[in-house]
Image 1 (cartoon, rainbow, N blue to C red):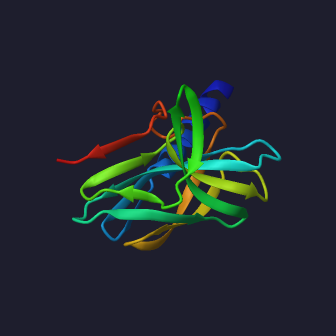
Image 2 (image 1 turned 120 degrees about the vertical axis):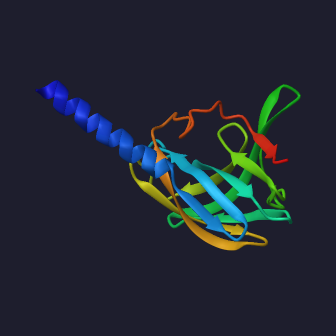
Image 3 (image 1 turned 90 degrees about the vertical axis):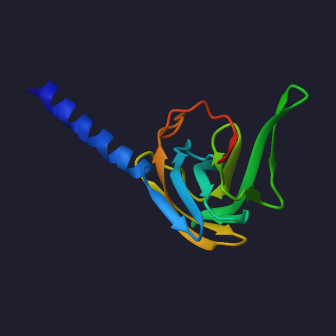
Length: 166
């Protein structure tokens, strides 16, 4: 009996987790999908945010700002290997979203950086975030908080990618 109850509860939890990760938001010609963040340890100074931005428009757009209540500073970052060393830096001019293309923000590549957390990100909760684009304007989204170490909704390898539609 316990096993059946446990399996049923797990199936329901997985269903709702998948629905949370399935969020899709449209602003202007941009579609935002796969939004999520990871749980952070207590007293962690920072956390990351991840999503895919698809631009179906004829003009490029640019993600220029990110903010969230309870976070001192939001930035757009890039991680890459330079001379055999992994480096991370803020993108001062934001992140270009090419016309008829998409950009994935994922662990190990482009990502949102939340610095100065008032409280940890807790698995199962949601993080409200405002993303600001140069062309499309601002949009409020919600990032479901996944487990620490999660690779996100797709279970991908976390590598940066920029796909151009033909």
